[in-house]
Length: 488
Image 1 (cartoon, rainbow, N blue to C red):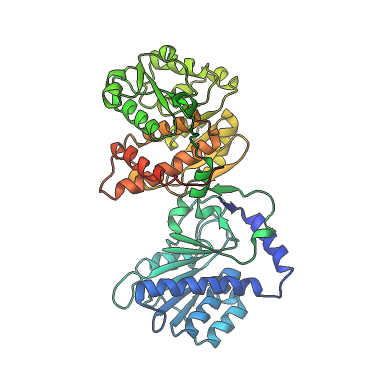
Image 2: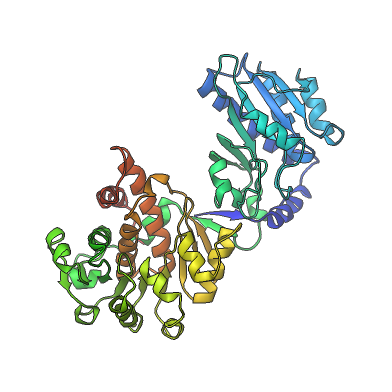
């Protein structure tokens, strides 16, 4: 697991660290890491540093200072380095002196460049970019190398123009190919629309980690976390001890949702699947290992339920949802089940449940449940809904957010737009239910399902355009990589 921290916590840690170091040490560490990454990017894109053209966009304060010191290092390696000073009277004086001493040149317009360093504003900025920065960033989109290619863009700490603590983008902002961030991740690099502007993110160790206090604002899972969480099969395992998951999904109008959600559940760790609904004949045809019946009341014993994918919103669907909420096992509520909650008629059943609930809304479903969309701060929105409903909330999106009633938040790093196609959420719900039935906690099950679902989308895309039917097979491939891990 990695952590992302809010600006106030980072500033406090920086102050504590700087009190133990000679003046300027932290900036030198940051600039060295930035210069190193720029050199590697130039090697990949242009064959090396020597003779290449680098443009620094330099704002006020430390962010601009980092860029200037890094530019000086690149100039000493033979690059032609220009700097456009956006706030000349507030430029970092030490950085500017080092830059000029290394042979760097201050310019007043955007020259051709092989690499652009965005040092306009850092984590201390608030609101959108103002003039002249917004005008320069707009003009930067037309910048080219001398041979007509688009230059590589590197952001310093965060892309300029994003809200650092929320990931919101209020206006013009830099779109980077890579972001070099210092000490730890920032929320804008892993959540909200800003994350898509960061490109590949590298965290440069400047000695900050041990000075960060408390818990991170948002956690980012890694494959090693899933390996620890994934249920192990003991030698005496049998189908019932592995877990049984029930699915109340699909309908006459959307029978495919039942097939897809069951396919997702089959990729998980459970030993048996029970399906209850009107799509029972089709499910039995596609998945002969599944025990099918027509109603939830006739399904038999399960350790978790998945309800809602393509279920419909008629009285039959509502009756099945009420029956599931009346059980004492964990439940996943997806799609139509979320719509059935909106009128509040099942609020009592929700409030009196002791077993975990996982809600899986996309933005429009979130708006119906919460009375408004997630807004500028998706992390805060997911946590708010989790608190209101006493449920784990999996808020779908490019960087899916998982929020818990206890206030923990996760951002999924594996999201991909190829999964933005009908039915992929049904597969996700099935996998999530399978994890719950196998005994994985609701928080971990939601995080793991989102992570593996994203990897499966990428895997499926290797063969061409992705449909929801491609995702279960790809899930098996990525889940197979969990084999061979150390026991918990």
